[in-house]
Image (cartoon, rainbow, N blue to C red; front, side, top):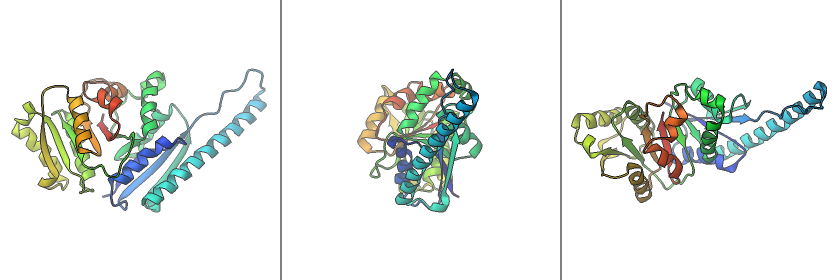
Length: 286
């Protein structure tokens, strides 16, 4: 079965980290489908002294330039994808005029497109933060989001394996299923399950996690359990990522908050990782 990703694109070079992470993570690109998504800004509003004809003409010219900029950015990213080994027939491009905020448009496309994950580069993280200031975005983000988010500040082909933080929540099991689904396609990665010692003692719970990964085709040597000591879990996770050069850290969001953005960037573990994680991707199951 193919894996299908929605990857946000912009004219900023930092946006390419999303594409590079997907490329670095998968050694075989043939089963990888990628939809490259560009949300073009709206033209500036009409000036007070402009006639409707003047305003319409100016906005059309602005829109033409904006879309041309988007097409140029898309072509650059598309060529980089091909250079990295993505299959031409597996690349789809979407350029649309911005409806809400950029990040809200990305999330809405993610909802309707049935993607396996939505991938945001470094610019995407700042867009998420900026969306707090937009009332329309806040309203949109109150809705349930059914797909995982991959937040990629950088990418390094030498990094490998997934550090999965298991807390026994429903969202954690959803993320386990996602991690198994992804790693089941790319067997060069191992899954290290980081779990509180109190939970590690619950053999039935650990068996549930193991079964999820085994059902996705992971062998026993691809699954490791690692107990989490006392102290700040987020700081311990950051140290482990630095020590073991993980490609990504994955966790479900067990917060009861109804607002997606609040669930993503607040909480004792996720808030620290969102702000401080630099060398590995952050996978979230909201």
